[in-house]
Amino acid sequence: MTEITDTRTAEPELAQGFDGFDPRIPSYPRVWPYLLDLSKDAYPADRDFARALWENIPGMLRVAWSRQLGRCALAHYLARSGIGQIIVAGTDLPCNDLEIHEIAWNTNPATRTVYADRDKLAVVYAQALFRGPGTRPAVHAAPGDADALLDAAAEHVDLHERVAVLFVTSLDLLDKTTAARAIRRITARTVDGSAVGIVHLGARDRATARLLPSLAADHGAAVPCLRGPAEVAALFPPGMRLVRPGIFDVMTWLDSAAFPDGPGHAPQVDGLSVWCAVARTPRSPFNGSARRVLGRLTGGYAPRLALPGCTP
Image (tube, rainbow, N blue to C red):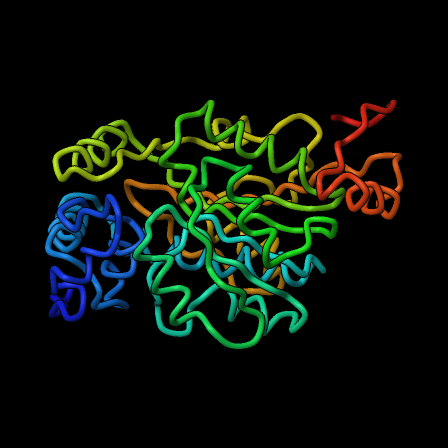
């Protein structure tokens, strides 16, 4: 890993304007780009944590790149599928032309992307630097609070139309109950045919399953929940339909779903897994256009009706 000289965020006055912001605590939106040498904007705590991950976890650089590929693949798939609105729940600092809104817009110029994160600095950077076709102002909202997330995003997207919410290794930082509740609320508040995409970390062996949380705790970072495919699948409520190939490692998902004519599988990542999945909300017998009308009449919230054959 190449050492990057810190620049703007080394100045302490930058952090003083953020209530509750502490540069001594590593933040994943800064750590992931730093691991890839794609961002200079990292505090010493971020750099120390990134170095510990790189030195102690086998294949950590490939993990970081697999995560990057996963977010690009899901953005490409969602835009290609005709969903014209994407809410990104988990925003990295800028990564030099590898941004979700750029992938989505180049796939479908009608796509609009809204970034959201609990990290206020990541939101400020997104508001300042994520500009151009297809972008909307970033919002400050925690991925685990689906209602706050959707309410904030609703200023920039139309929740009466299909929307995709993309969790980029942000559900990893939530316990099972909170993560499942977030997806359930998104399903309840979005129209039929909307989608939830997930890029999620997992462990291939018990040693790594213990090591990553231990390193995070030692450095004061949020401790991730490493889940297997079955545990990731359990986060989706009944009635949501997984897009083929379901929940697989990034390269399998990339080949099979986003780029069916792409190259063969890359070597598996040692130690950690990076899972990808997209699930669509169920299509109810209640006509979608009628739901949109009801939504407008009820102030933006159209409840999913419990009709025969429809999962509420």
